[in-house]
Length: 197
Image 1 (cartoon, rainbow, N blue to C red):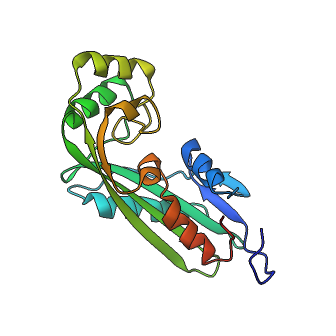
Image 2 (tube, rainbow, N blue to C red):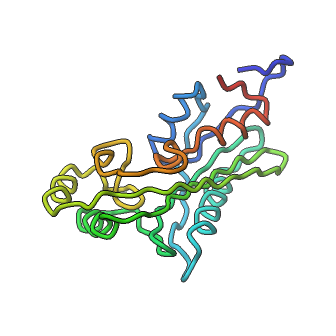
């Protein structure tokens, strides 16, 4: 992929274990040369602000994938109820706890993106969206938990799956709630010579 001046942009590494982020990049015509799952400690610090936590995680993921000749794109998505950071649900019990907490209320989804260049330049953005769930019945929660779709997801749900039927209101970036804000990501990549349709 070349820019209008004919200069070939640097290759791109996606520092993420999320197949959704790769899917979203492909949606706008970006195919990373490599996908690497960064191995970092994702434990929030005590009383850590959700926005600062998202930023710290995205930077840590980018830093965990050093490269001398590539751009590294990393992102982190945080679901927050007030100042409370909801976990990346590990099992059915955590999915149920998250959905019970989110039922009938508005919460925030913050996705931080970091683009690290070989020369040490780091550009970053944080996109905040507001999401409101309808009030969920026990039966709805039971059915969703049974799909296992929410396991491994921040806040215990995937907006691009069955949980889409729970969403009464969304303000912000849908793609950021899925896991990667495409408008902001495209802007960062264009700044490094990538042509994004």
